[in-house]
Image 1 (cartoon, rainbow, N blue to C red):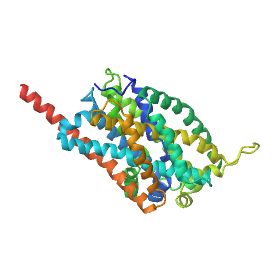
Image 2: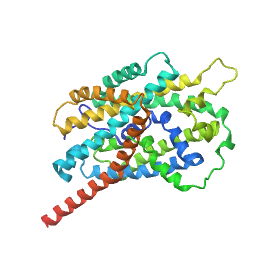
Image 3: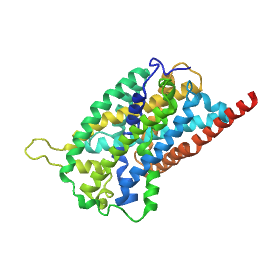
Image 4: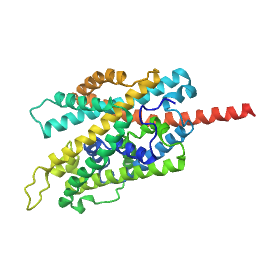
Length: 373
């Protein structure tokens, strides 16, 4: 088995932490406005439905991966679909990470420039963040896993504490009506929030590292807990945004989460401009997500082309990531087009490619049993 370098094994809990840190990234700032604009008062229902839908998707991936406990998606896909079909799926898998990465870099560059360094070009902000993320992604998996675990407890705690101060401005009447009439919008919204939950695809790379004695039921239970935490986290964000700003105001600003925090005043304290504290807690979370996604891209290339090190591939991908991020900065039409492409590619991979791989796997194993009989 080609292990992910130094770290040979990890627990199911560590896998759940990686899923959480990969999923919770820039989207907590970038996604709420689009969801509220599309669904309105029913956004919170879409969040809950989306959590259930994408948990089903990750369970399908766990089922697929457990059939090949010593291999990642890169190794067994060519055997299931042939060399050409396998290469297409592997390219599709890596493209998902690439498109998400350039979207995140572009969005983060705009936010940091506008709210923190208004005289600094976003290209410089993107370049600085890319250098830091690249340095982390060049490390072995054991180092990256430790960084993810440390950030999980530090950055998320700080982010939660700062965010919960917005409850001071919460107005429950803004949530009414709690149950909107248009369920079609809510269902469409549940699928359109795939970028919020995206990143769970990493289980197809990490399952060989999970202790072999972990059963499918144990994995499903642990990842279910991770998705429960993700759903609760996003649910609180959406409810507070609507409760503080109302639907009409939230969908009229590009980053409603920052507007929510900006309006908070802590009486009797010297603390002001809480949005800066929120950004200071959010940037390490974004760093976590980007670094691990870049590492995954390098690993996929390394395994597919039978190299022994992911670093040369990662360094080759860095200029492509930077150029792609810059192209999305000044052209909103291209950004919207890439966002739609990423959404459909993600949904297609989860609900078309993975079921197809499962069917092929069951068919090949059933054929093998028949032949041996």
